[in-house]
Length: 341
Image 1: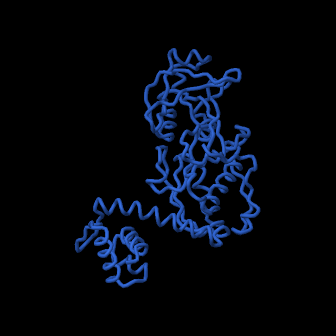
Image 2: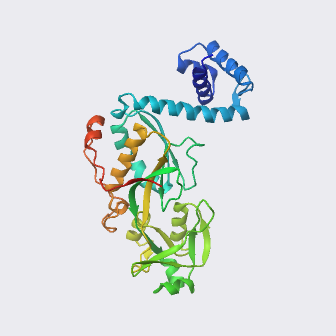
Image 3: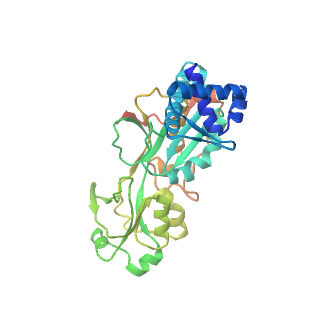
């Protein structure tokens, strides 16, 4: 039995949820696919699939084997790509995970640009702020904001964003506008954001060049930045949020910045991937494209925080080049470091 082929056949059956569709996509007779799965189960000594006349489903052993098989096949694909001309034409499925706000406001509007440059890369984008296990979940790379601690990952700094303190006019009418940091603890309340570890993010301000933390009483805590912003817009309390998210609401008057003389610390944005893997061409071009995209946005590149008007992040549109020519001429900032954490 060719165990590698059996692994490919098994994964295709699971993803197609059908022996017949898997056989068609592999251009094999259905009886061959059935025999391969039976031989694989006999070789492993476990049942991988539950079969009925209408559907198939994974057994617990089958689910575990599928997770390992997809990771192995992806690594084989990446290894082979390194020895072909994939550097000029990256290809294959690329799984990334990004915060929902960055995905919705920054990446999704620019996806046509990425697809035009790299038409053979299939993007699978997860959006959330939870902690992702890149190995167990077979994710190629993630984009995250904040200081990073996981030493098993390589981090490439691709941008930075400024945060601000603000509130809805209705809240300020009820509670008044704070004039000093001391006011925050007296008669004011905050909408807090809590991380995947379950802890509320601390409120901080830069005072005379030094970071100062302030304990602000909370009224509600959420773990989604979109929900956090929505609570602020409803007048639940003061919020500290990214300027690129708040900008249209500041311009419309739905939010008002408070304590502008004391800014919260800026937040770095990094793209992370496993350090013990060969960086595949598809991850490299996505990393370069994301760094270029963020560099074109004043609110995410560390430049003038008030430079963008209208849309949350007014991105300069580049001239699209053929994939090979773009690889040689890509506009990636040279001062964006790549480092092992």
